[in-house]
Length: 158
Image (spheres, rainbow, N blue to C red):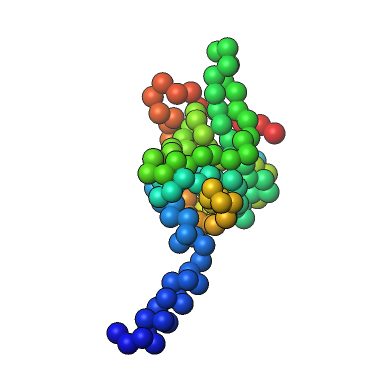
C-alpha cells in the first residue's frame, strides 16, 4: 500500500461515525407486543461495552416518550421509576429484562404487533462525556413472552 492509500485509510477511519467509538454490542433486542389502544410497552436487550460507558438516552419514532427504567422491590411492593442513566461497565453484560432494568416506550403511535421491528437509537456517554449512538432494530414478541422465572412481570400505566 502506498503512502497516499494509507493516509486515505487513516482519514476514513478518523471520520467513522461515533457509534464505532462507543463499541457497545447489543444482543437479542426485543419489544413486548401490545393490544389495541395500549399506550406503553417495554424494550429489552443485553448490552456489553468495550469500555466504561453509560446508557443516557433511548429514542424511537414509534413512541412519544422513551425512558430507561428500573424496577425494584421495596417492602414487598414492586416499584418502577425512570433513571437518568445506566452504567455499562467495561466487558460486563448488562441485561435489560422484564422485572429489572428496561426501556419504556410510552405514548405509542401504533400497536406493537408480533413480528414487527422497532427502530431504537441508544445514546451512550463515555467517561469523558463524549456521546455516541447505536442504531438497532428490536423484534416485537408476543404478549405471552414471560418474565424470567421468579420475577414478576409488570404493567405500566401513565
